[in-house]
Image (cartoon, rainbow, N blue to C red; front, side, top):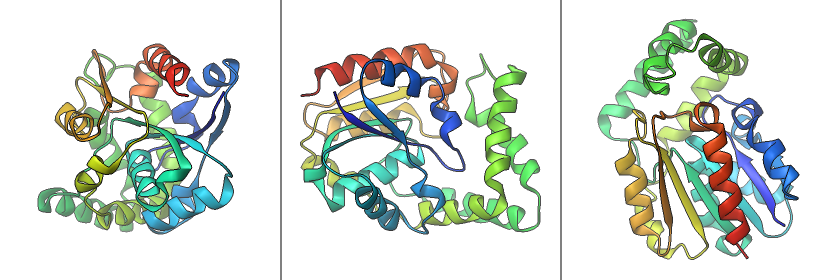
Length: 234
């Protein structure tokens, strides 16, 4: 069995992994949801804290920003990463256009207009199939509101400052699973295809009728993929 570290995305918490923790634990894995993204200012600091707080070889499963932290961890200490799962993430640095969108969002957060940004982001966060699911949308809004403006600003700045990890991909040797919703509008499937193509032996899975928040939108499918993959990692 494996020591599995689940890394949430931007401004999210253990809620994002609420369906995966019991499923992976029931299979005998030691599962921890980390919050290093909420306690440190930069991705390198987050990755270093991850290793300082968890001993031995780790299986890193990161979604969105969590995947970026996982890639930074591999940059720092590849020998500590037994296996890697990247869900709805990217290895690319932000484009100038995306950087400007983040700057504009930060300005709104500083003005106390968090809900204005969140409401606009719902259409991009979810697949249209589930975008009208009021309970799921409320879950998303609740955990981002809990994070609050200070965390939204800090985590966006950490992402904006990250390195381009595309050149790192060829050096990754651990078993790697790459998963993306086929309707992900924030990190489109081309980003996951690029990651899988860049890592030797990586497995790519596209989840049908799914957007960016795949652990919430398609929990059963994500659980099945993770459990099957973890059983093959040894």
